[in-house]
Picture 1 (cartoon, rainbow, N blue to C red):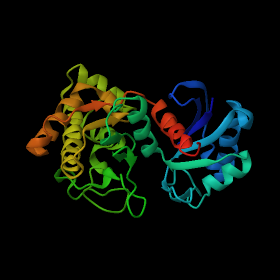
Picture 2 (cartoon, rainbow, N blue to C red):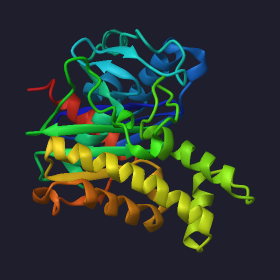
Picture 3 (tube, rainbow, N blue to C red):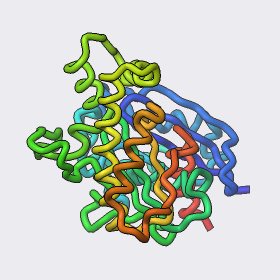
Picture 4 (cartoon, rainbow, N blue to C red):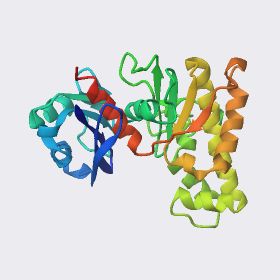
Length: 302
């Protein structure tokens, strides 16, 4: 029985899962990402994690879902944020393959998330899937005909940089203005609440608790974010024509004060033929990227 390791490399946490061809996780391990120590420390931790769940005697191939823009053909990180200093230019596939002596496949973590949800999660059984991740940033992945679409330059899926009216004139971290991520990401919503309320909140989860209890400012902030995200997602649906839309990340955990405005905004944007497309929460949580990475690894095996 062939077993593979699926690695998820994020800015704060790294995880590995040992999985079989059915998508069953047989072992699992996590460690903090040594982000400030540089790429070599991250690669060393990744190597140790694979060895923790069986090493080269058990693992036949490794799949990686990593933060950053990934050139999946070369297995190289093309660009990354300062959450991972020096990460851009890292030869993920080459270095991990050299250290482990195993075949390695690499993709962006959001694409891995989509593959996991399509394999064993909320989108199981669907060939054409739009996955949106709303958290610290806003990302997306499109699976069409069962295959992730990466685009000509490897940047397909940057849904956070879709313009929306609610963000007009607001600076975005990418250097542009008017993008949905600037107003609908988790940090943007927390900042909006803090600027409008006398109640202190250290985390967006606190804003969600206040909204659920009927606090008007908290409810208005979540409605604003859900509406802005919904307008962007509805526009993307018109372009992509998915069978299902899966929404993950931390912000959807804010509950119905966020989901109801999101669905209402989507309904105002989509073409009539798309009004019955399911828009559902992601089902696998953190395991999605691990299973998607494992699925990548299986593409390397007979």
